[in-house]
Length: 118
Image (cartoon, rainbow, N blue to C red; front, side, top):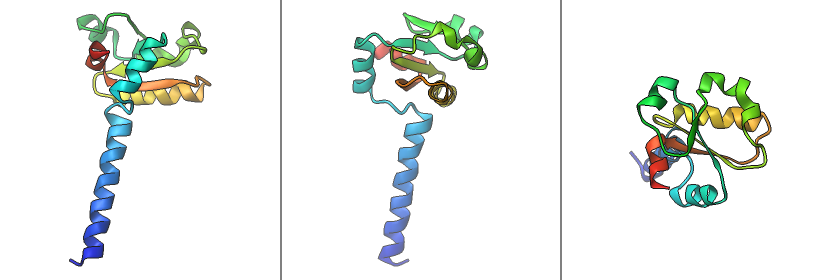
């Protein structure tokens, strides 16, 4: 394997790791989330009702992902929104839905436990 091939492979792996972090593990940094929460962001947990009832972050509101589109009126479009779930997948989808519906400031925290650190 020549050095150009090795450098290309390393570059591709680095890009894949960054994409994984951005879209599946909560794309927002803790510093960013803390700043947004301090500005009054709504905390939205998109897990199922049962998951939310087992444990959730104080101050978060449960809007399951499958109900999000029909419950948009419950959210203030003027405020930032931090979405979370169990691992980051559903909150990533929630972020896409909210942005498609015109919400301009949506952050994916990934796992709901991350909100405990804010």
